[in-house]
Amino acid sequence: MKKVFRKELMDLIPYKPGKPIADVQREYGLDKVYKLASNENPLGCSPKVKNAIINALDNINLYPDGNATLLKEKLSSITGFPTSQILPSSGLDEMIDQIAKTFINDGEEAIMSDHSFVRYIGTTKMMGGVPVIVPMKDGFVFDLDEMLKRINENTKLIWICNPNNPTGTMLSEDQVASFFSKVPEDIIIVYDEAYREFATHKDFPHDSLKFLRKYPNIIIMRTFSKVYGLAALRVGYTIASEEIIENLNKIRPAFNVNSLAQVAALAAIEDKDFVEKTIHNNNIGKEYLYKEFDKMNLNYALSQTNHIWVDVEKDAQEVFVNLQKKGVIIRPQVGNFIRVSIGLAEENEYFIKCLREELGK
Ligand SMILES: Cc1ncc(COP(=O)(O)O)c(C=O)c1O
Image 1: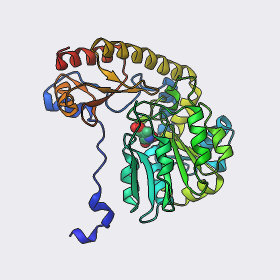
Image 2 (image 1 turned 30 degrees about the vertical axis):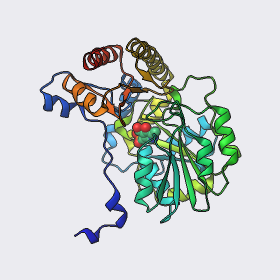
Image 3 (image 1 turned 135 degrees about the vertical axis):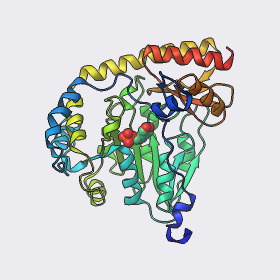
Image 4 (image 1 turned 90 degrees about the horizontal axis):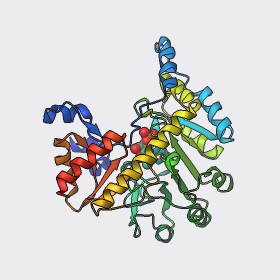
């Protein structure tokens, strides 16, 4: 049977998402479980989104607008790029696959960092590409100089996530600008901004679109899953040159962004208050968690996202299982590192209480 499958699949493992709340409730007989594992929005989503979805329910017998025309037009008005340079997708997850399918030929290399979004590896391998994994520098930041050194005639693409998941760390405007200027223009740079709205640092490149105006080999990806709280609906978008968008669009599944997701994204854009509340909650939660980690003498990376990368000085897998038994789901990383999403005050406090018990601190 093995021979019927494409050879690339032999080396692939399925993506492991954060454990669902219901699974943990069932497994440990718990009523209350807090999920701080998937960088979701703890405030839910905007009430405006809920109304928009209710109004759109009457039409779910109809196929969605496959072109997502209204959403594209709205995104065009807020980015200043024409609709021909914008492509909505069923989350960035779908776009990451589409990018790999569009660019990576068998044996071509894709450069990425060792602690970055795990989907970059799988999708590169899926196309028969070779992931070139560059270790991070001290402080869990991308080693851009080393990434540049790893470019060769076989390099097709570079995956950059800023601010980064899972470390929460960022590249500054100057670092990004210098890197982009040094990458040859026939190499695609995928610039994943899933967490851009949470970045508060003054040196963060808040206006990444200016780089796209200068370098047509950049693909910028953004999502509605995080600050807008629409993770279940699956909607994100990509901005790139007309030529890149045209080619990505050739392999786009028809009707990829469903109609509820389209209206929800449009409504979410309008609710600036909700976005502000989300960012405010994140900033308060982040400061609280930093303070508590400091009290426990735990090392962590300063975060520009909605999650924190912490060294818990104990096997992360063990900590993950033990916290789950108490009703907290976090994400174990390599060695002693965990990634915890920033939640509501009561979630953060309960997580800290459980972590203290677990670590005896
Ligand atoms: C860095 C990064 N990129 C992309 C995604 C996928 O996001 P989406 O929900 O839009 O598929 C995630 C999801 O967690 C992410 O962390």
